[in-house]
Length: 113
Image 1 (cartoon, rainbow, N blue to C red):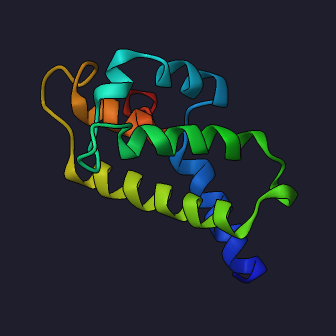
Image 2 (image 1 turned 30 degrees about the vertical axis):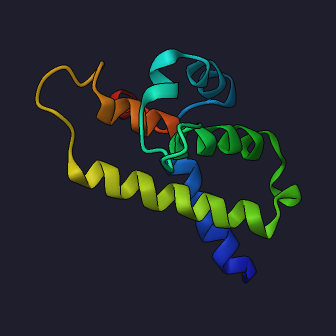
């Protein structure tokens, strides 16, 4: 990945992930977080919950310490957040919706926008 591509992903990630590492880590401890989202069918951790844990790790690193794998995950996060926001959320009870909970697992709280 070129330096220009890395810079673009960095900026898009910073815009898409609007939760701090501490607020995301706290959210990931809740039952709502653990149950929101899609699993691979094994009954284990949801894809979004796993992503959230990875986002916390990434956000704790300095930009110069990020790996190619980190940037690949950051790009995945940006894509997910943009697609999920484009679908739109529920008209009522956004706060308690699985739509919001899923986004929060990916580091984006739509009520902060």
